[in-house]
Length: 398
Image 1 (tube, rainbow, N blue to C red):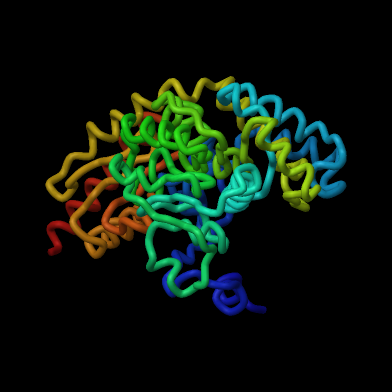
Image 2 (cartoon, rainbow, N blue to C red):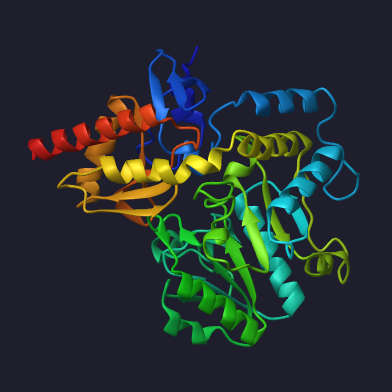
């Protein structure tokens, strides 16, 4: 009989020639355990997904209760289903009042696709603005808005009418004009290596959209659900978009995404044509129940109040001559080193010592730090000890 490893390499589609290929058995809290019983502290939360840790008991209980009631019934938007309506009500209570309607989908890419469709339908305009080093997903539409040509050039032709501007460059914003349906932006760029927007820049983007009638779309797929120390990163800036994208951490480990807008804006999907956006599994009852439980955990356990202090501890501890800079906001931090080659050796040493870290698509010389918000002070000290010892060992070996 074939082993799981053999099946993984023989029959499961691969994304690189060098996957980590560690066979995992279980996960709980801030740790993942492999089949040999080795425990790994998860310092990246499955790429900003497990914001409240793995298999939080409140989320697991909500999933089990929902499975005992019903799962998929009909395509999204036809039946009234309590998991969806309760989640919608809770989510709307946590976002700016103008974002009064939510459309549930399965992922961040789907949220982006739906939002761009909505912008084009509402404005009747053809063009979409995005920014260099941006990342909004891997579907064909999202790929058209990717900020690094290396990842899209082999998949052309892409969606037309796309313009790329420079992030944090106010002079570039004159290119937003009366042909622009929407401007899509991350308040903190994810795959660029956790690069925050400046307040002045986001305010200028909002002002230019208002001047031209373009819609502003905030991609908070990575930054949302408490990752930056506030429920939404936009709260740091006081800038409200016309459309908001959420996913990743929303489901507490289950797949779900959402885009939010005003009811007036969202009603464009109801006619000309009707069923203007359709999803079979969007807002799946089990995922919706898990998402509501996740929001309840964030609130009941007051997880956001300690994020700033934990961020400061990482800054305080991670001091080494090979660390050039630490960027980010809240518990989404990037640790800049001199090269990918150096960083990769450090990441491999960390993995050997039971610490899961990563790099970024568009910044492969920076280490990703995005642990569950539930990470403890002792675990932060341990993680920093492992990172620093790994850096020192690689440094001395060169």
